[in-house]
Image (cartoon, rainbow, N blue to C red; front, top):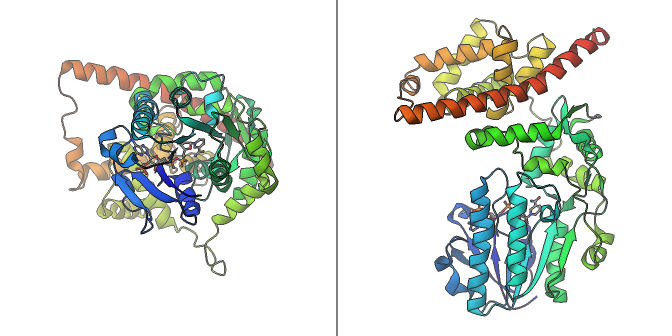
Length: 460
Ligand SMILES: NC(=O)c1ccc[n+]([C@@H]2O[C@H](COP(=O)([O-])OP(=O)(O)OC[C@H]3O[C@@H](n4cnc5c(N)ncnc54)[C@H](OP(=O)(O)O)[C@@H]3O)[C@@H](O)[C@H]2O)c1
């Protein structure tokens, strides 16, 4: 590979792996990076352009002399619909215009398998990728579109989320889990990009790219569960559409607290298996099977020095983490060490065991300790149906500490609104959000409680 290549999104999952590979070639690399990537590793000969996709004045002039643009940058995850549009559609349009003005020859766009989903209600990400693809094809540049499926790698946030889900005592399974998934190794996405460059495949084709084999979502989650938790998954079937409608309702006010958005659950409504094409066929012989890929990644979780037994969290570690998450849920802030110290002391004095004897209490606490959104769900349920449970008792304890500690009592004295209209609006929206969360929490905890009650005679 030679010539000058301009890359967006070079600090992301695919970008980091791609740069490691391209730096071994003769190509000159220009990287468009945001300042949030200041700490990302860089090679001395990389030309870094600090800028933003949406602002071509930050990078337009630097496209002069560029032969190929590789466009990886995108907003992903739980962003708001307007953010997907602003970065993924408008940002791509700006990049295409600037590339044409500068005389760029080739344009490689990394889209997503989601652009081909048929059921994309609520999925603004999929829609933004679809529109961006259209802009690329209509740009008049020599182009190619790569649509990867789920990309797995050591640093993949999807992998981290999957392992969190897989280690839940009960794994939620939406819509029966029959849709197909075909995860692809990030190394194979890099091979796909370098193959396109080497073969000069810029004839306007769209290549879907999955891994070696496809399997139903249920089997895939079970595989991840077996690798990470060492046993078969216990699934909790959940209705897909009602949960999506509910999430869509609460998202405008509670997006950041939710474990997933209505759009992200489209993964359970659409097949993500890739079609066969000449690119996939060229790469397939050297791809790992999904089982091998999952096994390899779950081994990454083993500490670097295997001779040392992994340190088990002490009861104090558990309570400190719990205090941090619950405080974030209660007042939207982290805590200072004086509060976690008070919490530990109070928990010991009141003989609050970090591992309660009651199985349901234990499960609810483990669930709530996973993060702020989880705490919100568990507490909404406990506030109505399990008021005397351990979770509620701990929330009340922490709240009284927060209200009385010098570092946090001010948080409870701030005026909550800017006027009567704002107050009514806020009240209405939080009412909707609370109701939505309560319905969701009930859908999760009631079946678990019933399951535990039914199985208890066998577990004594
Ligand atoms: N990961 C998957 O499973 C998957 C699956 C299918 C398709 N894809 C697609 O593959 C591509 C690469 O994915 P990835 O997993 O490597 O994504 P990623 O890790 O989220 O990285 C995205 C990169 O885009 C950059 N970026 C976001 N907004 C930007 C802006 N306004 N201006 C400049 N840079 C911006 C980010 O910069 P910061 O570092 O500053 O945030 C980040 O480096 C994306 O287009 C994604 O949609 C990913």
